[in-house]
Image 1 (spheres, rainbow, N blue to C red):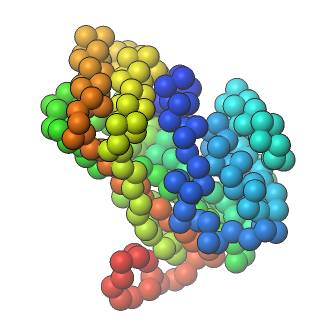
Image 2 (image 1 turned 30 degrees about the horizontal axis):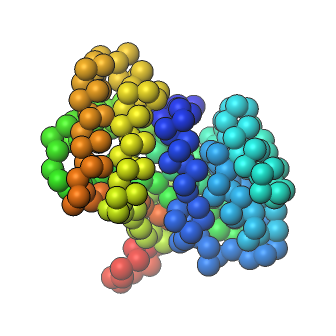
Length: 276
């Protein structure tokens, strides 16, 4: 089962549509070839998916609900790229073994109830010699200036809501471990997003301010008794205060893994900036 903590409120889609292959899947791009077949798991509104479609031979994009795919279909139609769409559960994909050269998931495993099973399924449908790629944020690494206590409250609240939904908001640091538990031999890297210009702060801070009060996060936090509407309004105001600060700065770390579907008995030895 997958419970998408953010929901599909306009404030959520506003940030998701900013995502591109360059700013969200750069670690994967060198592995792509013009003839590759690619499965995009949890494609969301499809901006990354459409970018990837321009770099490979064919793309199949999946989501766990029909309504979620409508957004990606619209993006593909607007860009004039051909993508096949299907409703799927990443824990039990309907595709045959060895169906794709590349299996990709961006910000998906943090929301699933069993990420190890999900990775095993991603590996099952990936051809020998192919590539399994996953990237997930790590919410505890939310770091900002100036220091605003209400943003610490928000970070803790979001993590509590995500875990109540069966997810793991600090997935980035766990990807390497999950992949090894799934029988893979991953190469692990990290990358980050940083927002510090006035335009970036207005966009990022405004989006989160709206999410705090209007998205599924807000409704779930209230339903769980973790916050009331006054708390949420105070946290939203803190996001706006951060966005308005001349010296406002924000960063978030993402974990990334690349792996062949074939397991290797023992991990590589030796130290490196790229963990194996």
